[in-house]
Length: 470
Image (tube, rainbow, N blue to C red):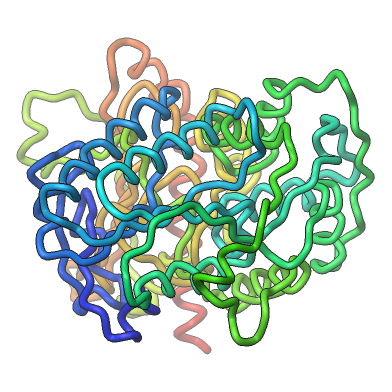
């Protein structure tokens, strides 16, 4: 988006929840269309008076039947593009070998074919995209960080041609500068090919870690490997399974025909070690702009916390704590924005990690999604198994749980004034149980709440008051 805007283009964006774009820096510079990709009227509004449409969508995180979901969405977009006379479509697909494909890559091909029947379509086929926040990079990073000795399937010896995120963006942005609409499928990739084993070893070397010892094993099936990736990395099982299935074959460029249409970056293509270094530098500088985890799957729970009067007649469990402090609202809010991720939750980090592991084993998101930024939050951001549902500077932070549980849960913090005019922090956990299992769940974790919640709010206030002293 920053590249398109800096090049002087007028841009529409399509989102299921316009409110989640509130904290995005370029929000005021674009037109926002709210809707779902299966909503024909909304997609028609998106395509109206549009010269070029980028299709950067997949459904692997949201449903096990993602191929059918992706096909249905592509058909709606194709029909709208045809009816609204969109001149150019651009679709980011995946590198793949000839012959039989995994469900993930076969779906990529099918979507490209559907779009190509509607209008002039450029299909750019990329392999692993390496950049801060990308799912491919996160998979390599976590496997290398966690496992000094790594039993792996034989496909770790297969060849892949990764591409840096900056080069991917170069090709995508250049599509909007073409003099005439173009049609065709083009491979894009970095300057070199590597085995998956080499990717992990190079990452460890660039990150200053000990290189993992990788043992290819013939008995480690794709199904077992996907469970292993799901457990060790933050990727959900549906996404891990789809990616692992796609690693069974070499994924390298078949040709450099793209160079005749779009010239490579003036400074040359970025090689893999440099791409890893740039990604790690962005993470260290707390400058990650977007993350795969921030995208919300279609099937994810999205119901906001009802207002208090709406609770009448509903079963709800709450745990409410409040503390008055000499710290300012701004100091408290800056501490609250550090919740989760590497900062944990200010109390009993081992218990929070255990809860994340339990969720991961149950097929949930677990706690390894981390967070986009170390120090700031935006609407829609993820914090481990939470998602930021409401955010008002110096007054409110509300998190909605996306963990596996028999009910719906929220944790919110409000900053206000007490009866004596001092700053007050109110911490509230809310749980709407689902059936008997939900009630049993609440009372099973209740003893832990009695230890965790008082310590959490106390330590948040303590850290805020330390800022005051500083």
